[in-house]
Image (cartoon, rainbow over all chains, first blue to last red; front, side, top):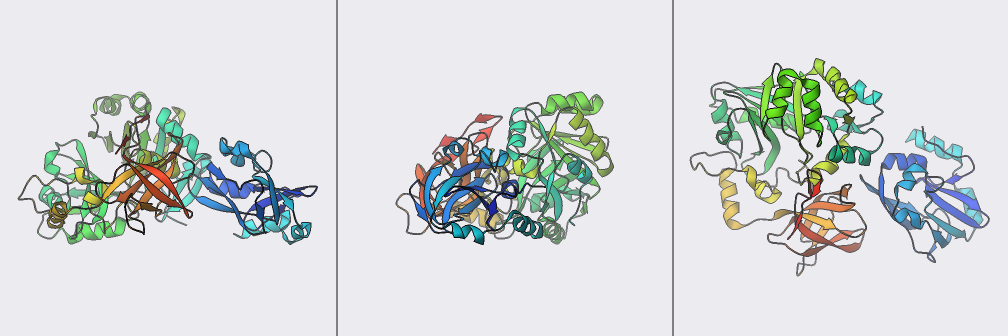
Length: 128
Length: 364
């Protein structure tokens, strides 16, 4: 059974968001990392890039396959998790903590309401 | 629900993540594909390969039949030895790759599971005029034990005749010990053995291997291990539209006996004279992962891709990505691979990439 922390918001494409003031911390869910298997490479956006919600923002690659990461909310990338360059396995080992991917300074926090709650996301992955 | 091997319950007990593989429920990994890969390179791992199709060829015409059916010549090995080769169609395309184990008068073939039906149909269709009996053996399981410690461990736990066989077998040799076939073959680039045994004895043997410290290894690691070892995967690196010359399988074709008219020979000779594409290794030294079907551009090539990756992965042993790619003959140096709308440089090398735990590839 994968973990789905209740305080986070989720995107149907398996990203999660944790809100820290006006910044959204973005990662991929426990379910997603488990489905992908051992990650070997993470391609992150550059700091300063501005995304609209739904834009392709990066790629995570496991031994098996590559998977696109989408920006869950609009705004500017203010920080990326540089530790993942050498330790992509952090995404497998701690998807909601040390395995975060990047931070976006939100242009419109109203977009968070469009995202799935933990219960809704859990329901989606159970029906997959 | 797919077909299940006799080890299905043992996989679940070991925490396997099961996937559909050619109609079989098989373990893709037991937690971490990377850990399993390293385990085989550094110590020993075991694979349930009972989904593979075992076919016994008996009868007075067995030898003549196989000299007609296969691109390699079973006459060039002694009984007690195995041979890797392809079974070709009239166009020289590979219907399947297989291992043939030669006894004094009969033979055992191990072919792929996804191609089982068409293989058996083809074998039957080619049997006309030969006094031969073709019999599938669904009653047999198969376990591969691979890694530098595989044979020492097997010697210990098999003792008696089985242990002696393990100790004295040359590479690609095998012995029949009771109802077991013990062979020094494999698909990982490491030393080890493949053991074909009755279904009902598989679970107990698996348990003894577990107790001896051999770790279950899934199909995920099997794929990264075989690719590092430069070994082809049917359906990826070759198929019915690809000849052995184009799949780095030239060494599995024997043209020496001019009188041996095996299926596909005519076309192979023609293509050999005419020239053909090659299956070569690629190494990506930068970040990223090479994957099957990515386009490859050679220096001075055309606008579109000049070749294609047939198998690609992250190499756990090397720490960067490697691939096999079908490229124009004579390609050397550096090529560019299309990865998500970017072109990344990759070195052309001669596979294998890794053998017996060591980096062995040579730049071309």
